[in-house]
Each structure stands twice: as C-alpha cells, then as structure tokens.
Image 1 (cartoon, rainbow, N blue to C red):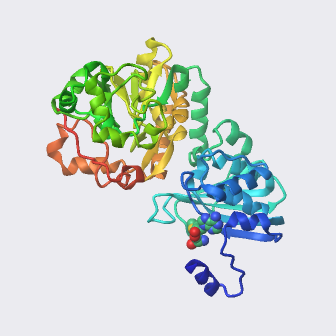
Image 2: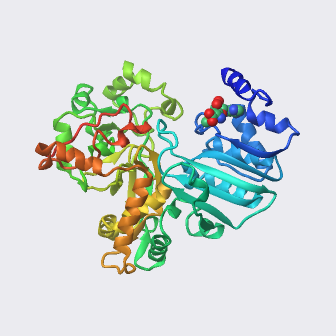
Image 3: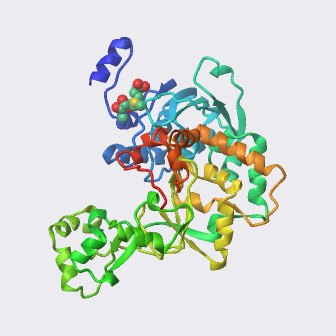
Length: 474
Ligand SMILES: C[S@@+](CC[C@H](N)C(=O)[O-])C[C@H]1O[C@@H](n2cnc3c(N)ncnc32)[C@H](O)[C@@H]1O
C-alpha cells in the first residue's frame, strides 16, 4: 500500500489501482494510447497460484502459449499490449533474457505480429547496478499492425544518445530459423554471424547432440544422507555393492579426465563421495536398514524428492556417463572424461556418446574456438558473469571434426566474437589473471583456477554460500 500512496502523491491527477494487474486487465474496458513500465521479474517458481493461472489463461486467449517455466514479465507485456488502442505504443524495461529465454520467444512473436515497429535496445552496462539481472529496453509502436523485422540496438550505456543510435534490422524469419529465436547473436557483427552459420552448415561441423546425448545427473533429495564418507560407510557397515563413487560438483573435477587415482585420493581424505545406491526391490541387509532408520534417515525420507518416490531410499537415474559436463562456468564449460566409472549428481551434466569411437572427436572439438563461440551463442548468461548450458542448449553446440577446414578467417572472427559475448555477460577474464599475478606462489601448482574471488561471478545467486577454495594439484 505504501507504494500506491507514493504513486498517488507523485501523480495526483492519475488513477492509481492497487490491485493484481491481471485481475484488473481481465475486467477493465479501458483502452490506452500508451503503456510504460517496469514489469515484475518473478521467476516461475514464485510466479504461482491464481495470478499465474490467470496470466497464462489471458495470454492463451490472446493466442500466446507460455510454458510452465515462464517468468512473470513476459505475460505482463502481452496482456498490457492487448489493452492498447489501435495505433497505440508501449515502452518497457525488460530483462536481458528477452535476448535468449525460451519464454521470450512467444512474446516477441506476439509483438511482431501486433505492432508496426518493435525496437529492442540492448544496454551492456547495467541499468540497475545493484541487480545481477541485466536490463534492456523494449519499444513497440503501431498496435494493430505487424512487422517482418525487429529493430535491434546494442548500446554501451543508457544515456540521451540512445534515441539516435542506429538499429540493426533483424529479419524475423532469420531470427526464427537461423538463431533459434534468440536475439543475443545479433550482438555480433554480420560477418561473425555469417561465419558461424557457414560453419554450422558445413560438413566439417556436427552438433553435439548428433554425437552424444546430454542429460542431468541424479537427484538424491538429501545429499547429506545419500553421500557417505568412507569412514561413515565403514561405521554403518554398508556393503561395497551399495556404494558408488560420485562427483558431487564441478569444482571437484580435474580439467580433462577423472582418473581412478583421483577418486582414491578422495577416499583417502575421507570425502563424502560414496553414493548410497540401493535397488528398488532387494532384500536389504540389516546394517543398511539400520542406516535407513537412523535419525538422519528419518529426516531424509521426509524430504520432498524422497517422499515422492517409491521406495524413498532408491535414487533414480544413476548412471555412469562417458563424460561430465560442467554446465555453469565463468569463461567456458569443461568436458571431463570419466575414466573412473564414477557417477554424478545434477550439479553436472552426464554425457554419453552415440558411438564409442567418437570420444576423441568430442575431446578435440571441445578445445576449438568454434566450440567456445558456440557455448556463448547456444548457452545463456545467468548473471554475475556466469554462463549456463541446459542439456538442450548443449545438444546444439557446434563441434568441428579433427582436421576440418573451417571458413577462412574463422579463428580470428570466432575469438573476437567470444570476447564480445563474454563482455556482454560481464565475464571478466582479467580477474583470473589478476589473481594469478597476486599469488605467484600458486602459479606453478595451480591445476585449474576457475575464478578470482574478486570476480563478479562470485556474486551470482547460484554461487552464494558455496565454498570456493582454490584447489591445488599434488
Ligand atoms: C520491477 S518493479 C517496478 C516498480 C516501479 N514500476 C518502478 O519502476 O520502480 C515491479 C512491480 O510490480 C509489482 N507487481 C508484482 N506482481 C504484480 C501483479 N500481479 N499486479 C500488479 N503489480 C505487481 C511489484 O510489487 C513491483 O512493485
């Protein structure tokens, strides 16, 4: 209510409604020449209940189908547009995810099908420095019309020169078919985009999904209970056959291959890396049942995932992948060969080859600049300098074959393109260098340094409260 009172004070002549927007939109007969605002960015987990049901239903009635993973801002914009008079316009602050999120695509489709002009201004420097979310601007004019292109305006900062910045004309057809309905690739130059498309179409490259399948690791429901230390396994006398070595997160992994020697080291240092892997329908030994009935087991069976599966103690989808893929990274994700027959949690992606003989091709392609560019184009920024690859995005990655002839000039353009896209997602590579410079005693010993503690990546939501100690090689 305080916000409504402030609004009334600031705009005494205005009608101020203190109400759920979607309920109001559903019942009002008012129509507007212009709409402007900053919609709520509420993630799908919290954009729930009646508000969400109403929002999605209103959008469906307008012919826009959002999936269950939609963030609130996109339905807000669709419903707002529907309240405009013919010829009306709107201007909104939008999250930069309008450039890549799956739920942005139905919105952009709606806009280009309903407005004469759609202009999206991508602002590299943060509009709201205290938010991890980057914000862009959306302008749409001429409600009731349609357009076959989007005016895309990448700018360094938000200032008064913005209105005169030239727009790149993005063909809606190209955006749909060549770029998987994403605008982020248009942060690159035409030459860079053309080379990437040329590589994608050439015989020299394959999509990751043609060579391998990518899935998520298992979900226990209670990691503390299901991951035992060797000393705990011994204490509870859990038989070996019910324990499987596992990788709990990407930080535990070496950079290229996980050897059984590394797993042995984890055992020696008594790390909680033994997954309790119980079959669904076996007669369990008395010692195992004792562990299940311990106070920790009593607590674990109440966890959401555990109480929703039968039996609660049998963790599903445990597999031994050929490779692990770290799917949240500062600079680039890592592909690590599993030479230790370990399994992994859903903190990693599990990769299996369609044909065993393609392992070297995958490893070779992973080092290429083509793949690095592909991660930037097919993955998405998560805020705080972090890049995330969903399994579907990983399947689209572009892998060159060994000895393949990529288009002339590809290497140079790809490196430039990678650094442009990293700059846009605030991945500051110099942070790693700064750290190495400030800790020369570590240089010769550091096996893999992921981020400097100064890096903005540390501020990102998924990484808060995690222990980011530096790992040293032996
Ligand atoms: C990003 S803030 C913008 C606030 C203000 N317009 C500004 O620019 O400072 C989004 C606002 O939408 C409000 N909001 C969230 N869900 C809403 C809903 N269903 N109906 C109306 N307002 C809502 C939030 O409380 C929040 O104040």
